[in-house]
Image (cartoon, rainbow, N blue to C red; front, side, top):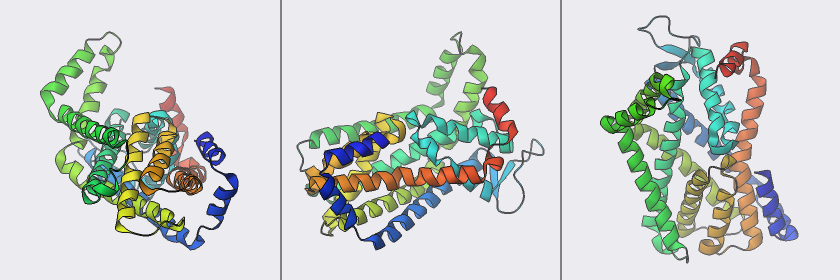
Length: 338
């Protein structure tokens, strides 16, 4: 990620880039950071909602504890839940966001919830993100298609979007259509290396099945749309702060560019989407908005820091401050047991 940001600086005229950054209105950082905080709150509400589905109940009062009996759910204080979610933001910098599994391990150390039961929440969050982004991208294209599909790569963009939509439909369909899913699980159970994990795979599927039900995806997708929309507003403010003339078309382009970059970064599976996001944003800003190299470099640099590094820094600080709560001695044993 750092290498990508350094490349942005090298590819831009350093003096012009510094001038663009220096002339950016500082007061705009207040609403931009405020919108980012709203984004975190809405995305946390997704996590909060999904915890109920796996029988871990966030409570304002009370304590974080495992189930007291088979008929009682585990509970987690909202403060513990929020700290855990925020502290997991740096995990997104791992390849394919694989480190987010650590979030499930920490939850297990707090509530004794099996990892195979809670890990699908990570998948569900990514699924909701994908649906939310596609909805925003599609809506922006519908509202201002002429201001968006004016690039030579329009056919490629349409292909990526259609392919992503089809993939999401197929994925949800396979999960929700039990006969197909059960055949796949039974087939995996026949493999020598996976036979002893069949019960865990079954639990993993049952949890995924519950989380991916339409009645659960609908409210969480609304949270996701709201969260990404706040990021789009922040991106629009960045563009206007860099000298672009405010207009409905510019706003639609900002929504489309940021959303499409999220799709590309997810497909790249690089740590934090590094490379795919920056290249996509840079190319589309030049092709659609017609921004100069210096302005494009400044926009890519600022959105990269605000979208990824700002949250990662906050997460690291919280992890250090609450390390005893998040990383008790029992967690080491859980990691060793993997």
